[in-house]
Image 1 (cartoon, rainbow, N blue to C red):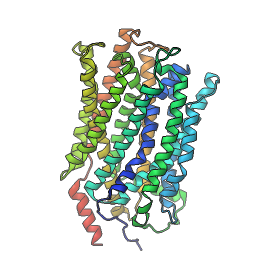
Image 2: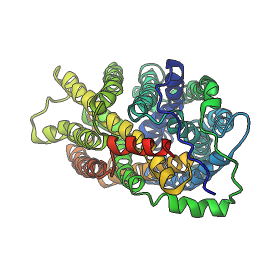
Image 3: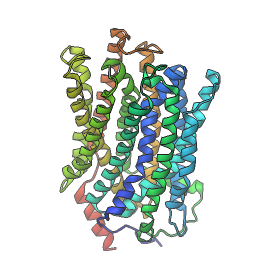
Length: 476
């Protein structure tokens, strides 16, 4: 006999639950900020490892960890107890995340080959530990409410806090930890600064995980009650393969492949672009953090507003296209000689305005992608009779991490192709090197973000289909 569907009520959450659902993503934002913005530069320019070796080590860690995510989803979906399916994993992740983060940014003085394995191992520890929080925590989204618009609002909180945490750490990095001093005229080459930043970040990540978990603890009795399953791990993975054949899920995963590869390349190269193409210095980085935060806050309001009463796929496509165009515009204009030169008083305000708008579009697209993934849960449950939030969000993180490693790997390859020098100084890198770097960057970002937008447009159902499915399930 097929068990009854366990679809949650289509309700609006209270402020405590929304804020707590968002708060936990601070840890993920801090991790992303560190991995994407500084990790390649730290090990390449500060520690002295070749960029290619660093890229391979990080990509290998992400690939291995990506294949662990389905196991995390399985364990989360099949955990039973008075703390529900998700909270035991969420609470348990906090300490390992902090320990792994401290190890990653305090490497020993080993040979290049040994350090390559060290980067691989410490990065893998951080990412697996954080998966033990992020997959169960994200899977709570579709469990908390089945309302079409509420899901967009919930994930707008998640992305707001994720970006806010990452950008706050970025501002502290440039304004406090990585500032020039008597022995480090280029602040981002200060090894001791990275150690101090890592200590603060480890505390922030652990606290955000614990506080988020506590803040959502009161929701446990209201979550769908799923009967205990006797399914084996082998049966789960067979069911996993059947479940992920869902057309909507496959389209969102394709969008994720392109979008997260584009983001990985952009983030990994961002510090190089800021320092060497635009020649940012001092307070410029504080203004940059503020501009990006304005963009993330804009997305918090923009994504729910644009989809209120409408459908998510079309808006997701437009937002992705907008992100691509806005991201590359300053670089295209620079190559054409139509953009303010470094040192011009117009450069910073024009550039940061464009970056803020780009961030608003890019984050909006990711918010809508997460909300659409939540909507897939009910479609799959109606079709298969099984509710598998952990499976779907594990699949989403599988793609994100697999191609996130590809993005960092591509960034390392781009730097090698451009013949970017080690120990480079702003203003001293040859113009032809910067041009090669810029041209490849433009081509990849347009291609990857453009393909992501086309995938969003192909998502197979919208508001009417989702609401009709809930009505049909309610009637039994």
